[in-house]
Image (cartoon, rainbow, N blue to C red; front, side, top):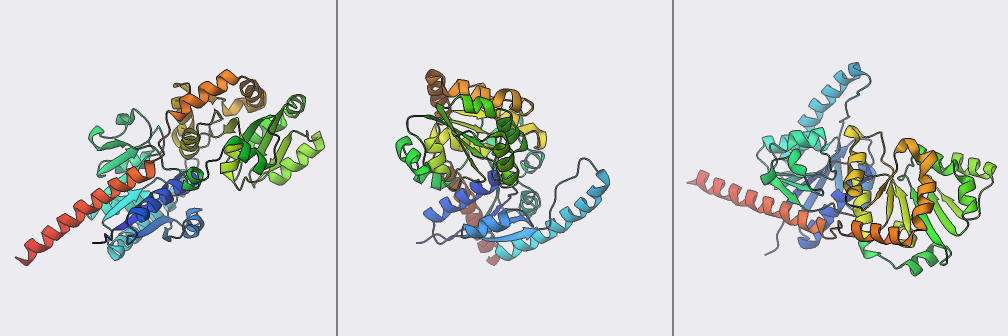
Length: 384
């Protein structure tokens, strides 16, 4: 008998939330192809494009985050939360899910709150080492909380926690390539060490400024090649500024790396922000990494993510305020130290969990099964 589960997956806002959400949905569909999955996201956020591109239906809520700088703007935010909760309740009633999954992001709050109030089981997938306010609030009514870091009992009831790791893009697992193949695909020199510098798809100003501040250092170390993803927001500016400074031959400047599997495969060392999704990918691929946490995130959770790895000898930390002075200098020193690179690779690989999406999918299905059985019993008793 074919199983047909109805699951809502809610959240988004950034790739760090969207990619895990899609990975979980894909894992459910692989195991139970007849299942129906509906995404609920925030209007005008990137999930409204990325989710349909992945082949799933999505409905948007007019939700927004609180403005910490201008408290008067939050009257409108409170209204949007109220409106989003009403819309979420209607979506849930119409779709009639067997379980609801929250992956973080604005939309997950009203969706999971309404689902729990309607006695539909909810599962939270917390990606970071420091739980956000919304997930801490939602945890009280959640049936299961899937985490990627040790010590999450600080935030959640220990009996609800399951260590699963963070789901990563299946394309990275499927396209895991050896270095020689990746170097060739990227048009790089196999005889030279490679440093990949990324600041996310939109880019990171401080990381870009760190590269520009060290152009002469990059030029002097011609035995190392650099691939620098500026991000689309900064590409034209960075291209002009590096041209004016005299672009070194050993650096490739690009707005976006379309094939990240090849870029990571070619890299001996990665310089990156410390988003939970990115860290999970580095762990899965066993990549030595220098983490430059973004200071522009709630509760400074990227720094906490980074330090969770640094404490295990699985990453190097460069503060955002020290990118100009330390970032490229540290990258050059590290990539030339074969023993250091090997230690970082071994330690970070220990943290990788390649089956995270499948494990979480199994938990979602267990919740759905329990709900179906409960509803079946309730209906039988009502007939009697």
